Image (cartoon, rainbow over the protein chains, first blue to last red):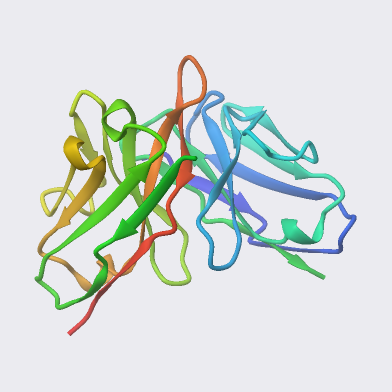
Amino acid sequence: ETVLTQSPATLSLSPGDTATLFCRASQSVDIYLGWYQQKPGQAPRLLIYDASNRAAGVPARFSGSGSGTDFTLTISSLEPEDFAVYYCQQRKNWPPLTFGGGTKVEIK
Amino acid sequence: EVQLVESGGGLVQPGGSLRLSCAASGFIVSNQHMSWVRQAPGRGLEWVSLIYVDGRTFYADSVKGRFTISIDNSKNTLYLQMSSLRVEDTALYFCVRDSRLTATENWFDPWGQGTLVTVSS
């Protein structure tokens, strides 16, 4: 099973700051890494797929990078609606499909 | 508009059974890979099961032999039949379309709002 480790667990930032979230895979997943955003009481939403492609309707301030085992989600100039929990997910080595434990981006 | 609406959750005793439904609109369920993902209260996301368009099914080890994923074409609905339920199956269960976004890979998009399953005596 490919384990995804996200860091940090919590990120305390202010609107306008840049958020940098990390996801490390226990084995290579090539570029098959996605990022999801989940707001309280809502279903997750796909943000990034294949490591760096923004999903439809996702603002340009969200960007993803990385390949192999190390990936980054960057949110430039945080907006109030960006404070949420973010999960990474891999599609290279499955079953099982696996998610990271999540990073909570909270208002400082 | 693509929409997924889950139903069928509720309170069930350990060892009991429950069938979750996911009514799809805006697309044909049998033409897409479909999946179930769950989230225990206050916890992260856990993939449960996936069904391919050709009927092949896949399960997480934690539910294999107890859960069955299926599709009713006439109702355009995805199901998850759950049996021998355990306390640790308590979670919000999301129905998800496994969408082909590139030539080589699928991703979970969109998601339903979820249906809550509580396993407790």
